[in-house]
Length: 295
Ligand SMILES: [Mg+2]
Image: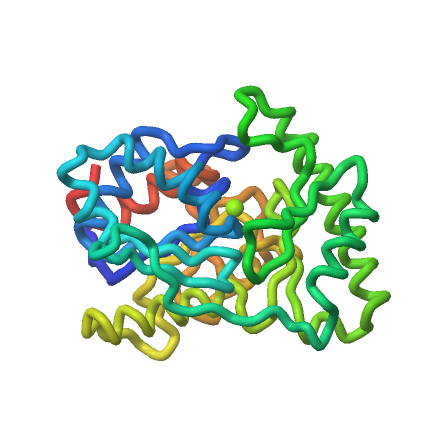
């Protein structure tokens, strides 16, 4: 079958999409495929992580597997949409760093951000960990079963279960704060924690901003829905942190997660025998299917 190369850009969720479920860093094969892809089209990671965490646990590992002389060229085609869509960064080769190109504000009119963090720290004591320092916009409560600095993580099933518990506590609190909380924030369960995101700054907005930036800075053209942007994530279900990313408002979405959503989009990924593929192997398979000369 001839490949059509419909896509002009690609966006990937990171945890569970580029990495294997429960794993911190991508495989050598994934890095190789992403490197080749970034030579063809602009690539963005769209993650619930904040910039430092992505650089420390994602980017550094990817770059360590790419020849030093080729890193600059790779970075210039690599964009970062962090904090689940709330902040976008573009690589500035002049200063050799990622520079912000947009940021949405936290909705203080719903609840003061610091107050919410303190309250959630109290309510999730013993199983959750509020991330106080590094996120600029979103509020994140991680599962305390998931410690990425330890070599041996707890069983991934325990981490996912704790994340579900944090999700329930968060929804309950927000309902108490305002019955209309959903007009202001989305709550996303990434499986390793929960992220509270300004409604106007979720991952769907990240796709829009990425597309607009490519139009502006590279003179690229897209249709009104940016359907020439490939979008891949693993948590499309309601309450998942890719729900907005993969619902098809913008981009052409693919789901590499376990849950199948009862809707036309996102599309699932199947191998030649009709078996649904999951997580990193599904992402690799999809990239090879959709783009020529990547193997
Ligand atoms: Mg994910």
